[in-house]
Length: 105
Ligand code: FES
Image (cartoon, rainbow, N blue to C red):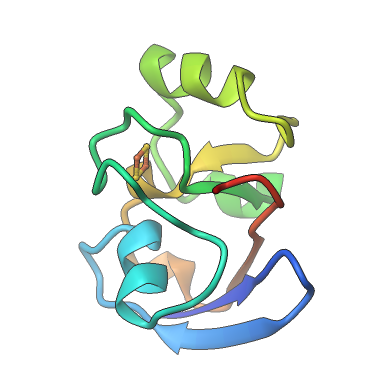
């Protein structure tokens, strides 16, 4: 599935991310800016924060309490907030667009 990442500076990159990888993996493996992923996907650093529209959020499992607690401490927390390491790519993600907020470093 092709996913478009909009970096904090507005730069857009569309990359192919394999099913089963996380949205965070898709960014890191393509060297895209803005997602630091300090903990490597362990749901413990919140440096993989992204904003995903409600329509696309439906493609993923709901955020765990652990994820929500981390997100609440981020600067750019909003209703669209998710940790991208917790979003596992599936076929329905094709065409998804998400925004990487400032503050992941
Ligand atoms: Fe650390 Fe997602 S990579 S919480």
